[in-house]
Length: 110
Image 1: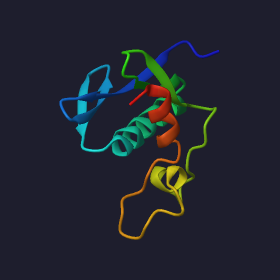
Image 2: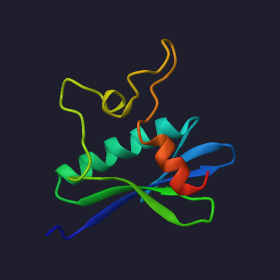
Image 3: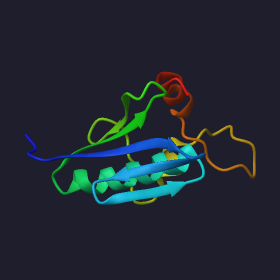
Image 4: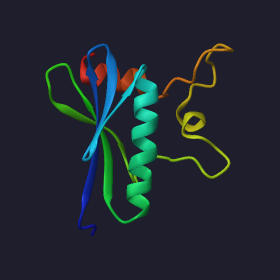
């Protein structure tokens, strides 16, 4: 069993999406960008032995799990996080959309 939990929080703040880390915050324009950054950071923590997860803040202020190290897929070295989480039917020229984004948004009540 892992001794240390690393939680990475994604929350709407002032019209942007914040990735809230133990040591500070990072700001993103889009939810997908914030989740991608959170998953990459959580994956690195998981590889170092932490029990790592990404949580999304719901409109009621509660936190909902979005990704957990060891439970959800992560890209191999030839892929990016976007390619694993992106919709294959996204129109050409549009940024990748997190596959679970609509589900997460529904769960969070956003």
